[in-house]
Image (cartoon, rainbow, N blue to C red):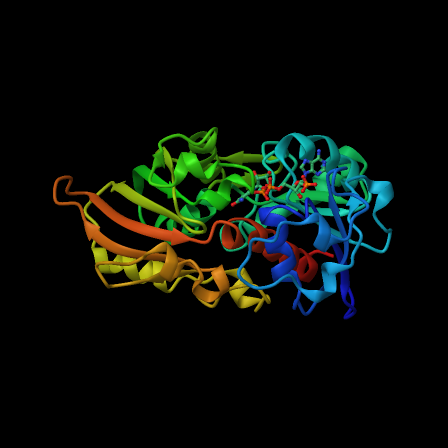
Length: 353
Ligand code: NAP
């Protein structure tokens, strides 16, 4: 691709993740918003009239007068190259393949993640999985393609595991999440269900963390992925926090591991997005804090514009001698959703197109 701005669109632009896309794309040096879509109830309205804006920053002037279109390929201009999808899963399953016939789709939805020829990618963890794009285009006869990013809690967890997994033999991981309400979408959790409360169940979330993490840390061989060779069990909970997922992680190793070595591997971790100096890539994907009372969602979710995961309380388990435990916080709608798709698109634009 040349030096000109790449025109992009957001599918599901009025929702929680859609708004994050707009906020992050507003000042982007390479991408320019040229299309916004939503459901038929919003189509035909000015973006400002169709949207209940929830972010702290005000809605960018540049999008207020864009007329929201229906989420159909014929309603999106041909000049648009990348489409960022923040559609509900059921809608994504139907429309994303139609868009991918001619557009490049970077999706947050889980609908296509399990398809063998659709890359599920975190740029710092498994950028080589983007090789599946060629296979996908050949298999399906598409000029475009679909690339997906994982579920929000999986992204934060896997970013912290990658530097550990590459250096030490992991046997088992247990993770317990405390997830923000924005993760459920604008109409997701009624305030009466979550204020002064905790909901100990998030549909399909545990299964997604358990399968996606092993896939992301796996090895690509042609079209097949050999999953990472450890066991992982998750327990997921919704808490009354607006943004920022917290996760308590317990890792069992093959042998006793030094805590400082784990901290060093995490805090010095860098990968392809940092080497390529991609616009949305944080200098340090993982930040390690020493204070006993960190990380906290309100204080740490915006680290490096919400693109870094903050880890704290890295410590030896006093009961199980080969175990290490720690706590992490990641921004669920930035690193866990919109920022993740944008980083995928930046990597693809730089390396593939
Ligand atoms: P949301 O707030 O409910 O927004 C959904 C968006 O999709 C809205 O723009 C809505 O438009 C549009 N939409 C709904 N039904 C549609 C239809 N039939 N046709 C076309 N557009 C339709 O949801 P969200 O939290 O942004 O999540 C979006 C996707 O990202 C989901 O697949 C979710 O699982 C995934 N995700 C979310 C997070 C997170 O932290 N929130 C993290 C990772 C992944 P209207 O306003 O017109 O209804």
